[in-house]
Image 1: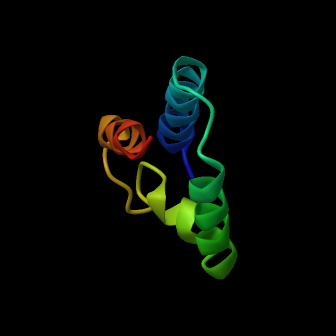
Image 2: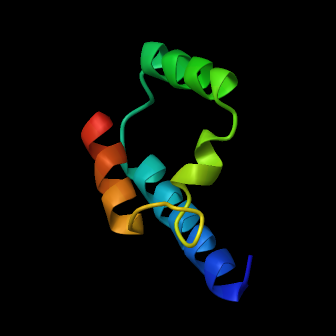
Image 3: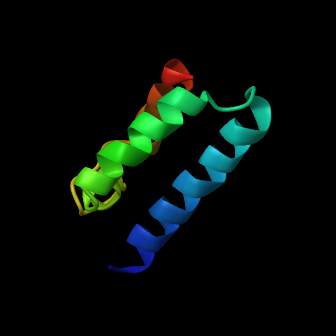
Amino acid sequence: MDRNDQQAIGTLFEKLANVERQTPPRDAEAERFINDQIARQPGAPYYMAPGRVGGTAIEEKVGLIRACR
């Protein structure tokens, strides 16, 4: 991982923090389902990250998260 990868991932988490502050509380059922999926596939967050690891654009991820909420 290089500096650009670190910046992209850091930016993603900053944007996610902003989304979290601006949205209503999380849906408990959805959160359980997501956590179950990650437990079954623990490498998923790595592959969802931006940069060389095969992720999509940060804005697309944030849009998807907003749409799911």
